[in-house]
Image (cartoon, rainbow, N blue to C red):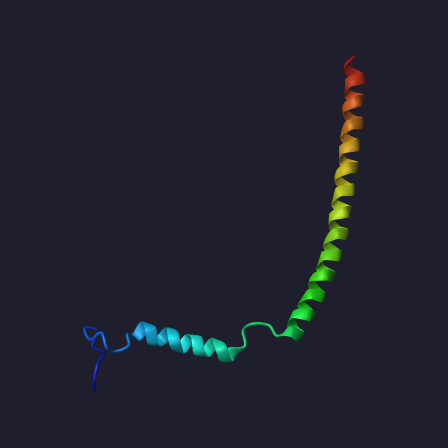
Length: 82
């Protein structure tokens, strides 16, 4: 049985061999989306964006209502102290 000889620079080192095997595995694993997947993803992102805009609009409205209420409360406190 032969073991790896790290002193011989002519042989491929195990990390390089593992890296090459990993790259070949990635090539066949289809980890990147296909064009059909990309169109489905873009449609999902558009719907998420629309929902996010609605949520953001509602949050802005709530914040503005809160600011108005705080302003009214501060004006009342000011009138009480004068």
